[in-house]
Image 1 (cartoon, one colour):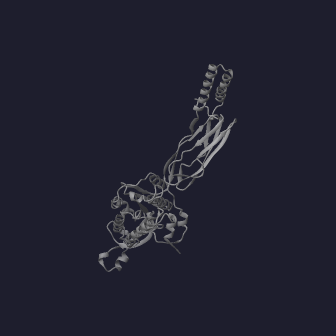
Image 2: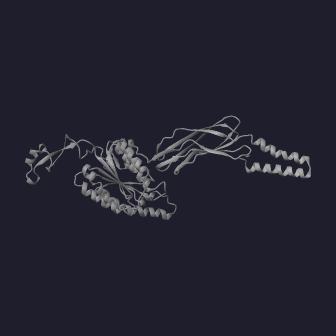
Image 3: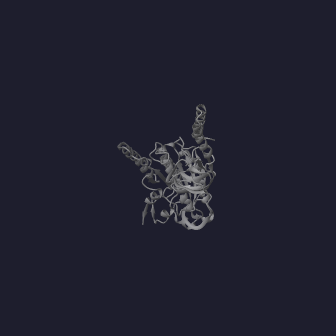
Amino acid sequence: MLTKYSLKFIAIFIFSLLLGLILGNRIIIAMSLLPLSFVLVGTILESPDDLLIRKTWISSRIWVGDTIDIEYEVTVKQGLGPVFLFQELPAHFALIEGNNFQVFWKGWHTGNYTFSYKICCTKRGIYTFFPVKWESNHVLKLTQPHHGDSGESVEIQVHPKILNIRRVKNLKGISSVPFPVNDIAKMGVATTDFREIRSYVYGDPIKNINWKATARVSSPETWPLTNEYEVEGKKTVWLFLDSAGELEIGTNIQNAFEYCIEAVNALTYYYINQGYRVGMYIFNGGGELLYPDAGKKQFLKISRHLLGLRTGMRHDEFLSAIEKSRQYILGNTPLCVIITGLDSNHADTITAGVKQLHRMLGRRRQKLPVMVVNVAGYNIMPAHRELDENARVLLKLRTRPKIQELRRLGAAVLDWSPARESFGTALIRQMRVR
């Protein structure tokens, strides 16, 4: 199809021809054939067409912050003129090198070109890369441009960052965070490894009664005493993830909730690699429970579930989350990790929940197996004015009494400021090196 540019030459030809006929001027008639000849000869030249675009392999699963190298090999067999290529980037992808828009000049011979750039994803989720769009123009702009796309859409999954477990695992020290590296499960097959002597309860095997220790005790109220042995298997780690809408403080890319997701993914990766069973309950978003399990399959299950997770409008589901997880907590005595933001308005429900966990798990003589990961959202947004910095200080002072109260209850509190350090560094900071 002809363009407006070529129609102008045809209009000049018609006008000049009519003028020459009216005036009977052969020179004008002959001159009128020039624009017509230009259009006829120009349309013989074809626009570049028949593009073959081959792309390099892109992993279907990447992590937040990873750099992706995208490269296309373009082959143009016929036509003459400029070729425009464009690759539409999904949301939350940043261009860090190269350009996703390229222009090539196709000469007389077959052209082979390279179209490449580097991008980085800044947020978890499932994204789709659409085919490369191309457009070719006529060298004299006499015909309409050709356009189309090449290839198929590619879907990739961007997972939250994972923890560098070597830094935590290889550091020898005393941790103030209750990492259950050598803890044993409450339920399982009994071994011959002695654990402790305790009072007999209904259901204990008669053969485990320690008659010598019973005879030494003068008080009949504690008779008889029985031996308790270690059981096979490792402990369970139970994660409580807060998905309240208040945690979206910051931008749509960097906010407290996204860092909560990163912390959950890092802890799951760490404990799964240590051989523990990991379960999770997501509260303040309608309530979602993931049954505890071990192995790489469980990590992938939790990681995939976190991809499309969104915040909710509720802020009072933590106590009910504990009740719905009661059978797993009492049956396995797990390390309970609560990932939340204590600078929110519903932090009092977290304190009430820790008290409930203290009543359920605090009867033992060991340290209370509860850890609270506080994602400090007040340091995420940059301070542009002096009032912004004052607001940060006020939020920090507001959070401090809540952290102290949780520690008085026996819970370990990991105060993490994502704007200042990574999650792995925050974990290492809790360790006192020997």
